[in-house]
Length: 183
Image 1 (cartoon, rainbow, N blue to C red):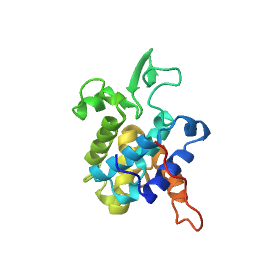
Image 2 (spheres, rainbow, N blue to C red):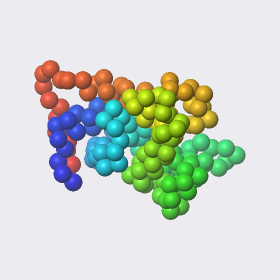
Image 3 (cartoon, helix red, strand yellow):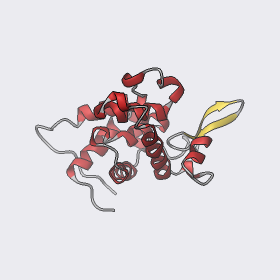
């Protein structure tokens, strides 16, 4: 992997630091960097830069496995986990993205699925929101379409609120530089 640029380092550190004290101990900065670079590869707009680490923060506290060990499972109903993996992808979403069963436990594959699903909401469902707000609204619909479909152009998921905290930190720095990422 190429070394992180200064801006990438700042974004990685801001993503981890805004996710909570415990997450500083478990978050892998190289995985955060991989998510940020995947955003660029998948065409995530610059206004949403950092949304994939924000989603990971909210859904799994930047963990790739359960605090008790093993795979991450969530959204239990009747003793069955409806969501799997670090981004809490449901089985139907895994199928919608054309992923092999079990792929949602892979952070980068789950992130790619999330972006595909978000992009699928762009267009008719978000046209009236304008270019500035369309991706935010589409991401909220990916997060929970039943909850956010009634919010219209004001829809903003918990992921987007987490991203806003990161973006505040990313404002221009007056003095000093963040420490370099350690392998």
